[in-house]
Image (tube, rainbow, N blue to C red; front, side, top):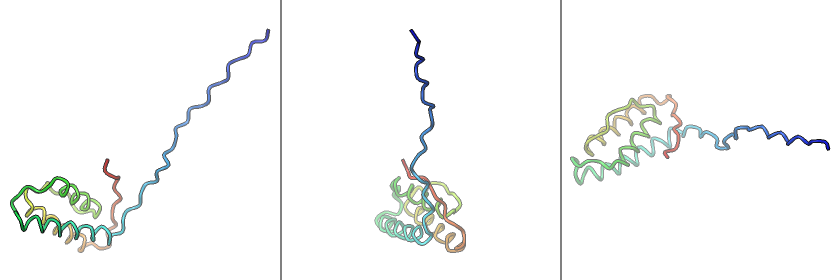
Length: 108
């Protein structure tokens, strides 16, 4: 009886992700979003400027600052400090209009 060799296992290949890296958003879009965040923070600051800002607003401002390649800063302790940080980022973005924006991975 002839023996039949078992079939060779298929080579294991690493499946490449189909997700393409997203290109950086246009500067006008990011600065518009920064202005919208500034309006929201201003409303909160007018109610209580010394209150601790929501973590989601702090994270949002940090993400926009990173996209605009602004220098990093400490997390603000009050809405007043958060508003100052947004103004700093806006001034930095206005002072360097030719600086490209940065593409960031989506938050998990």
